[in-house]
Image (cartoon, rainbow over all chains, first blue to last red; front, side, top):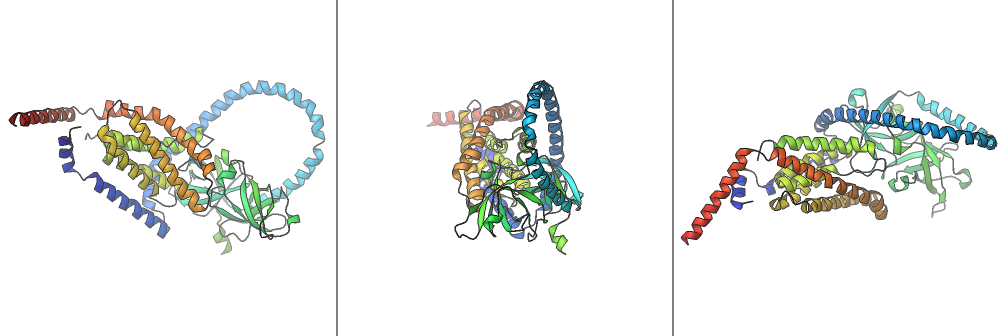
Length: 289
Length: 191
């Protein structure tokens, strides 16, 4: 490009260096403003929500329709293969009979779980579809298609099936962002169901690749803790409602202070394949009032 | 500058954000999603210059901030600088030159991934660099590069075919160049 032309063009406009400076100041200002005041910039968020969210909803709906169509086609072929396989499985059923004792044990556990489910089924809940994953590759937060208009507020608990997914962290007019409990830096105050020993559940994206997250600061006696024990949200949490199932203990390690225990647990929610969640409209803070 | 640049830019940011956040989310369970907005910002830096790229970067980053972050302005700042730096290479712009923009996208993505690692992992007391590199950074980098090989030529084609076709501007540019040459020759001759 000829330098003379460039000069002529730039004479009319702000030099790029100054534009860069202005953008830097705006961005820095935004960061400081949103960080210190801890209030969302509602105007920008609502404007973005109004434009973007309807499209995201449409894409998600179309996507699920396509997936449903493809899986249906796929299923017909699979069914034939499965039919053959089922014949073999009938033979195996004899062996499986032996497992009935084990199943009886599980039944007792599930009944307990059912009671647990009842405890938070009394709260008002609303369903929402996940319409977008957040920036970056970590599925540590996602956008749902319900917002302020649907009565969603910040700090409402989010569950899927019977397990805790996370908490609403940001609310727009017609969308909201949910931060999951598996994301790094998230801590949930929890307890073991059968003896109410307190512990802290911390998100860990690295461990989550093996389907697990961390817990720590478990007090109490070691003989009371076993892999398979259920972990639920505790009464002392300030944001999470008590008694929501988080997962099952996988490993137990003694900390170096010989007083507390830590280890890994397996969340009950399948975070890889989330598409629909339930939001509990009862907030913990209001429960205490 | 033709007036078509701004609408196409807005449309591109809008579409790329939707594809990145909603469409690819459905396709990729493994989690590696190409950073389309970064490709767009860097490509516009090369195709249109630093000013256009800064605007593109600012709005791309702001969208990522609004839908993904507790603090607004972080991605916007990163993308504005990315656009500015990419725009510095605009003077080498050559329609058939693909290596420069692809290298810039590679460098830009590496920079963004490193900053993400520092901000979201190290400051949270997590130094699992190996995990971050193998589990997140490299897949994303690979996806971004593969996608950019397809997306950059597309952007270039749109730019050459639909945006830079203002006949008045083209003619004006040609006149200028002819005029300069004549002037220069005239100068040489007088010396």
